[in-house]
Length: 305
Image (cartoon, rainbow, N blue to C red; front, side, top):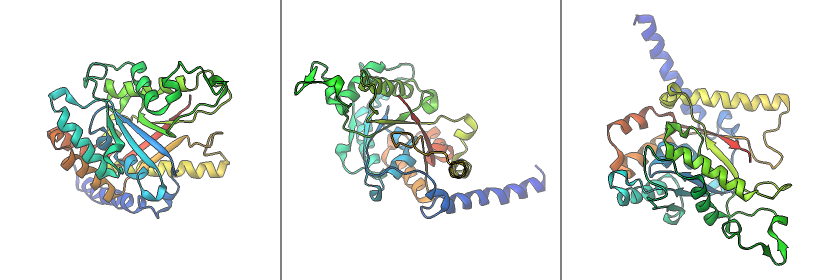
């Protein structure tokens, strides 16, 4: 590597870092151009304790900002007991969630059912089982199909009802291609399709957003992916204004969400892993929390049902 290349790197890397630091503050024009969610009941679906920190920390930190008025809950579908540490990891998830901004311990619920939802690198979870859990938690009418009528009115003639507004989870790539992650995507789709069955003409009361899987280069670009994603997101917003494109769909929901952590938020996510998820801090996870872009950047796409 010649001297000119070294000089270029020496100038470029700090410049990127400074741009990210300044632009991710709430007062910057870049940050102000990103859509925000206000006063929403939100559930984050994860497969294992530590998913909320390793993959979704920018989202959790953003949406639990008290000024937005949201109420975020986490529903975790396993205790992460593959190595016999399930009870420890449950407590770690509670601690991490509170550190990242959740209100109460009761806002974290862990499905400890290793028969249906084993912590496994080779097992897909049945989408119908995931859908059943979601229906029981968030759609009481759907979870009790024997109630064909309510107050003399057929339920098919009534709008669908749910106790949450927003559902967040992995996309079909699962970020790491983990079958448990990918199963949550298909289970969430199954739940919303069941919720909307025979409900033609109504909007779905729950909006599903999934975390976008990137290529390997961007996945391990760490904080240096933040300025790129930030610029692309802001450019897209400017393009919408110039072209007159609508940012929301007919049911007034955004098609994309983008969360970029500030340096302080990134450090907070680091601490959630290092201090709360102590049992998981083996050597390769040090690499992930240092180089993984999902510790700093979350871009989510709406899945329309």
